[in-house]
Image (cartoon, rainbow, N blue to C red; front, side, top):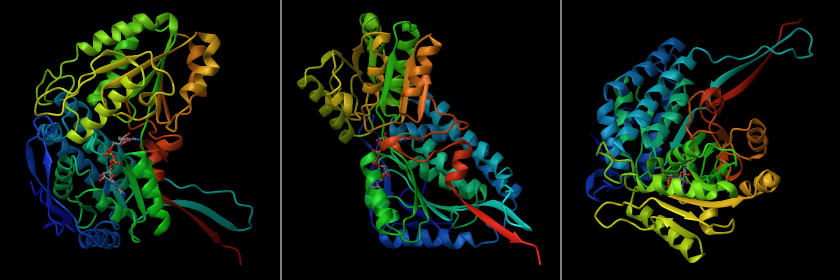
Amino acid sequence: MMTAKLFIEGEWVFASGGSFETLDPATGETITEVGVASRGDVDAAVAAARAALGGADWTGLLPVQRAALLFRLAALIEENAEELAQLETRDQGQPIGISRAVSVAGAAEHFRYYAGWVTKVQGTVNPVSFPETLHYTKREPIGVNALVTPWNFPLMILAWKLAPALATGNTVVIKPSEVTPLTSLRLVQLCAEAGFPPGVVNIVTGDGSVGELLSRHPDVDHLSYTGSTAVGRRITIASAESNLKRLTLELGGKAPSIIARDANIDAAVGGNLLGGTLNTGQVCAAYTRFYVDKAREAEFVDKLAAGMGSLRLGPGADESTALGPLVSSRHRDHVDRLVRTGVEEGAELVTGGSPVDGDGYFFEPTLFSGVNDEMTIMREEIFGPVLAITTYDGDAELDHLLARANDTEYGLAATIWTKDLATSQRLANGIKAGAVFVNMPPIPDMAAPWGGYKASGWGREMGPWAIDAYTELKSVWLHYGG
Ligand code: NAD
């Protein structure tokens, strides 16, 4: 693979800013060198994306022809599925079963889903109150889109952006996370193989400063970003200070999980174990703050602790691994610091609590009980296998419980475990979050909107909502009277 190179205008070119290493988090060993894009490289990629917008071989394609390219890309992802899954596992540490079933299969499905949309994006004819006037709307590509992605689920999250961007006739400059760039580079190779014309898909690698160049670039029309809320704020300022480029922001989360008195505790333990520790807790919608009815606390804590204790830690490449490493030593130190803060602030450590000795960046699955709402572990995004339990006192406290669950800057996801329809509706209606899951783990699907309330972001991805995110709506007035 051309890992030390950038892909600009249909060519793999050496990065002018040098290179950096990407590491295997299960061993700490270097996998390969990746290029660092300079300001000149970023300018060249944006210019290539701009030029491709005018090309007959892209903008001039019929919808069926553009759809065929996306279908071909989906097929190529499937033809190379095992290689992509192994690469994702090596670079991010994801258990191989998740890489195959979620990351790679999900990416292929996303391209196929948006290939279907290409021939179905419609406008409307509108009853304006002007005589002899036809009014209609049409959707047009926004133009040059920067796609800036995080290190967790890098292939799948890139697909969430790239598929609707291409389906609607845009051109893109991709900037993957410097921590996990490899599957994004491989996907760009597959785009070229699928036949997307030069300049339509470009990729520049490097750290946050490369993302910042894109966020400040006067010729980027829209930046779609997934990552931390702190960087989302910086991107918003950069957009305001440059050309007010449109932004789609998918930011951090701290999802509450409410376990009601009537909950099926075994189902709640299974669903929350998955929802809290999938990808070693490195999931933006991970369930992390648990509000358990006091009457069920002991049973829930015991069973969840047993479940966490039974998770098999190991390299993602090992088929029997349930919990892989954290993505980097830096991130492991961040998780460790927050866990130690939990202990210092008086939370009771039920299980886990420490990094695992050795070369990889492993951390024990960790459960706290006796937590209160003000503790740091209840407020800050940990992004590791760390769950914190507090309690509430039955139905009489539901309004207060809602206020507690909503007492956060985040609003990405939430979950409720109950058999009672009325309780589920009261809580689902009251929670300020982009997605509420009743009796199930936080699984995204391309047919349902994905995005956050409050500081969890702006806009929605997936479904027809992503078509909106990657298009401008034009209003055409046609006076046909004399
Ligand atoms: P991050 O913010 O550190 O980095 C994300 C990307 O932004 C990287 O490509 C990075 O190089 C780039 N970047 C850094 N500084 C930049 C700047 N000033 N301008 C432009 N780009 C810059 O995030 P991360 O640590 O890679 O990812 C984890 C975070 O992502 C968590 O907060 C998680 O909740 C969030 N996330 C959200 C969703 C969602 O759908 N809402 C999904 C996955 C992850």
